[in-house]
Length: 155
Image (cartoon, rainbow, N blue to C red):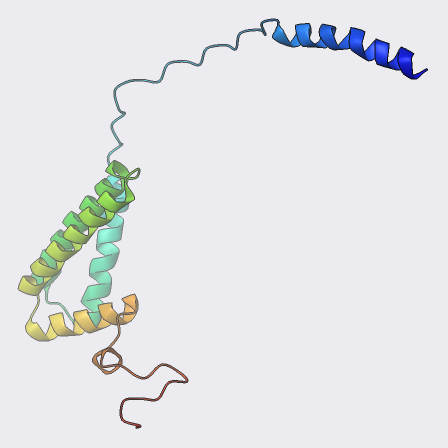
């Protein structure tokens, strides 16, 4: 019985090998990708304007802006939001490049706001912004000892 099983396997094996070496059906070719990169769509102007207006309204309430300042800040916010949205769409495949461009836009916005606001308004804005972003305050920046470690004053 073992010999018949062995003989059957020997006869079936070459047939299986030949079946695998026959050419398979050719896969359908994939449609060729366009060589030219597609241009990203422009940011939605209504959304950009709504976001800039919301930023301006919040700043007006928090900082007590006068009418001339409101218009200057609205233009600054509109330019900044439009630039950020364009960068997000343009560099969505290159996150590092996008982050760099957005950082540049933020620095430019801060410089323009510094010119449009009074020193007191700008300081207040800066403090609120740091709180919101989680930037450590001067107290925390000087350093508290890590839990479980002695502070430098306890020796």
